[in-house]
Length: 113
Image (tube, rainbow, N blue to C red; front, side):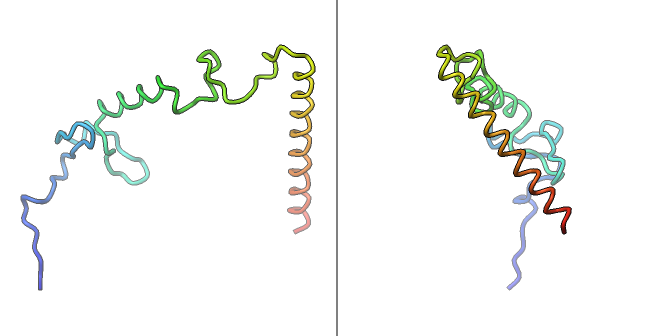
């Protein structure tokens, strides 16, 4: 049995519906995805307000906001206790040293292959 779609149910290719404000807008009102060449789910206005809300709440980059008070890791230079600061510095040096050793071992393995 053959099914047919009426033209009224198909969405026009020159416009799209925003998932946030539910308005049908021309494609110029949407950002285009470079990979898929398709319009974004949200219009430019809704995407802008969504981005500003996320940035303002600190959801996107919590590790970068030093002045915002939300730092998810200890900042060594801001640690008051000298012994704790030295312990953190030594631990950081050890982590870097081990990382460099792993990288060097990986490069030597690649050279052998």
